[in-house]
Image (cartoon, rainbow, N blue to C red):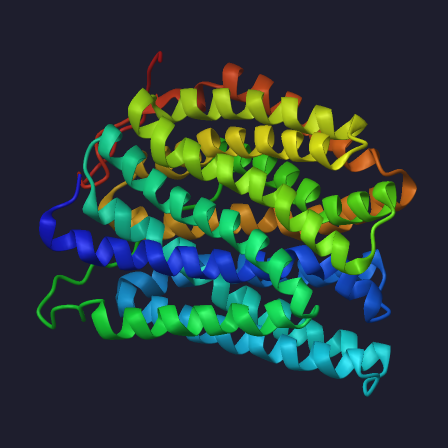
Length: 415
């Protein structure tokens, strides 16, 4: 799939993806109980996540173009250093908030600045750069899908280990995961700085070409990605509240339980992408169709989940579905565009993912305050609509010459 000379850099790129995702997810399980300890409401938490997502939506296309101009190494280092600073600032502000030295309005504003703006914008650069890099290093549908599966597996590994580690660290206090997460990202930033090769000064500079979001080659995949990530975000953001309220858990117990059930979700996502997807050899369309169908089963179970075991099973099924969907969503559009358009496509897919977290947190938390089952009913309905779309729309079945040809041609084909 990759030349031997590129296997090391690809590993480092995947390590950066893992670090950013693990750091984010390490903090994720404690956000609901931490918010309540700080005197913040569910809606405050939703706004915090939404602001971070808005930053990522705006920044992702910019990072995609910067990757072509600056090189992957510079963008990755910028992302890792910025994310470290954002999470460390968040930890310091949270500690001050728990000590009662900051009024709630000022506390909330500072959390928005550190955790949402700085971290959100910085975080957005890594998945965009990783996708663009793998697209440059691969040719052919099978190799492209396997390459994107490596990125997805790195994300899944971070999502699997992060919540579990974060949940266990809670026994040292709610603040401990907030300090460990930026330390992890800082170590990976150092590894990338020392080991990722600097670009050749005489390398060919690829001029990034713009791609419109409504380009007929791209928008069906963006819509499919929006639907699956919207549902995924709604479920993950509200599951902590669900566990605490239905099981009557304390803040520390909620952090641990949320970490464990999220571990089940991310673990299945990682295993499917690392083991199943490379073996089955399915194209992007089939991966998305199968994945969306599996995800719908998981969200439907969440509607009636009343024990931690049932929640874990539901999230494991949801994660398995995401494991199929993600490589299809990430690889599909990259196979339909030229080399000059890869950075723009990576930026658009990153924006599509982040856009779901603009609406997802607000919708999920608002619905949860109405009825605990409401977010999962909406998620199931979204996925049923997505299933109909990906089976019916010919745009998902597009096949075209490889991304490194000069003039890709849009040619619908039957699976």
